[in-house]
Image 1 (cartoon, rainbow over the protein chains, first blue to last red):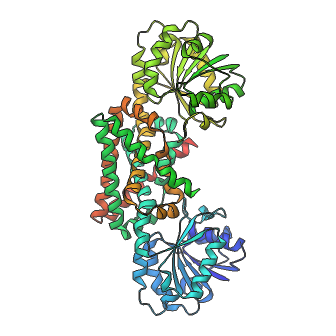
Image 2: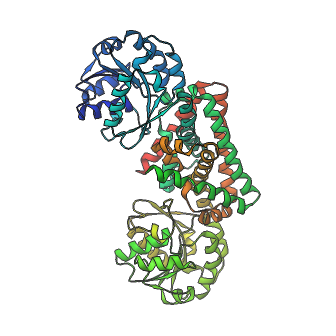
Image 3: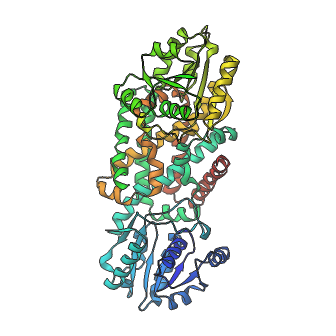
Length: 282
Length: 282
């Protein structure tokens, strides 16, 4: 199958690599507005040919839209305008804006809204890897609005990546990811700023930073160009969770201030329940 | 060298395993007030013999105090009361309380205050591993208050564990670890509570939780019995950092509320600077 990858970053790049390796993609047309990305994608064997968007869509059987979500919202209707038999999927971290942008489009059926729950803190084609996606969930949103043949092909694609498909409405997806992904990024960004702000002696950070610190702050390396549009599109849900998170932090603060060690212990014991969630995941 | 390990958990247990493997420890006397721990430590070859505290101190050349910090503060003066030639070190995550507890003790010189910057979210002797400590910093506090021979032995011990020794005053240590360790645990506990509080459909957490979420919430599995005394002993520093962290989170909140996307991007770009700190560490 001929594939167009629009946005040659971590997700699109990794998808191209794995789909080529599995024999699903016989040719990959790469589209990206950054020349550094297209050059690198050719070098790394992610794309076989670099074209403009219209050419890629015309030549491909399947279009993977893996640009920042703000760009996807603009490009998706344009792509659907040109689509005939082709299948279009996106991999964005927010779904409502995108679904709204193509609601009622005459070719809406050719589009499948997906969100593979995999990523790293790195970005760009050089971050793309064969060792991606496996064992994680892929969310398919509003599946009933997609044509059955297109849906079946996309389900097969994700199964081939080693993912399992989960189905929900876009609105529910956007609430859930605010909890299990977006808030993690905000806390990590804010934690990095906390340490960078207060700690003047950088050597002390460097020498004492433990694996625990690295783990909680890892996502602070993530790309602002990717994350700003996500927080923008998922504003209301992100604010809800952020408010709740600040409330939870204030409980810890209040316990420590008031030396209420019994309640502090209770708060930590409650947090320990996350074990069950994470263990089920493994 | 005969070693007493007081507190047969993750740190004491791992230390015993590695020191035996390296031939530094010829015999390990294990002390723990939990029978489940002593049984397990014998089974796993962490301890060769279980004794009471006084016996272990009398028989050992070196005492490793690796109990929760609240317990260490009580036991350390008692241990120093009995010490003649022996060396005593502790591995606690806070140092000021402990240093204060033995200030001016006639045998103060036999004690070295240390903090190996390694750990996992797991606890108990079953969490102990040979694959511990390597490549991380060990902090030695108020080294000038320790006898030179005792200090030299402890420096050698940590070098043998693959760690590099860093020297500072206990007071500075407690400030630094509030930034690079204690706050990470609080944000992780609070993040777990945020998700557990709001997310009613646990299956959605389970299915959508990505590696990023797992990374930021991992420390929420940590032992409240270990962490409550740390937050208690390091109360003022932890509150300072926690206040700063809440301030940083409020900046993110304010940007999103006011749709100030330029400033939000700036906040994230600033957080990206943590790359340099983490990269120097690798």
